Image 1: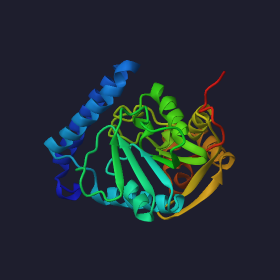
Image 2: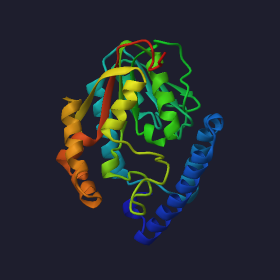
Image 3: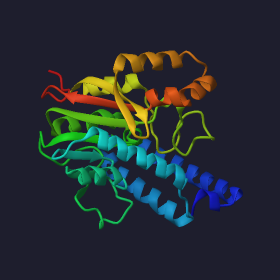
Length: 284
């Protein structure tokens, strides 16, 4: 059911029902203890996808198609043939499929997969608890997560990122993509709330992500700027300076400026961390 084919009033009703569902599920995740969350992540996303199917809620297909094409182009830009590629929060596995088509050994992790397990040639799909990556240390050459980190409980982000560092080889890279806080919210609460209150449990800034990378055993962090199929590496200092300037605006103006194409191409958070140590962010 394409957005264009659903009458506006019906579309509004579906969006509001999903908004209420996501807020309830977000509260469930937030209230869960650290010990419980490995189980609760799976329960929450099973219910989320079942609700989508039950009420017939689908995102704007044209917008979704553009986003997926941009993500696949980013993978083509970032990975090379024969890499051992790990994707965390792989969802529909389209990026993982792109990596497999390039010639990578590909592993896709998620707490639940919304698509059937068949029909994914070259993609090894593994269900995990959302936190601990079930592979040995130094198993992969490259890690990727797209629209994943913001779905984690804030207390769990460092645990997952440290485990990504653990399973990467020395000198390997982790490309983390997550929506920027200044142009949000980016979940279903857009249009309802000033900050994300749905299944984006926390939306981040560039500085947040760089600090997370450093604490998790990554260094030499830089940003990837661009859109659609044109990408380039940008020194973190330059991207941070843009972020700092945008932060000086009031909230309504900041959101407009951060969402404009030139600024968005820089502030769309695509952080690359390079593993240059073997301590995984642990301290003595």
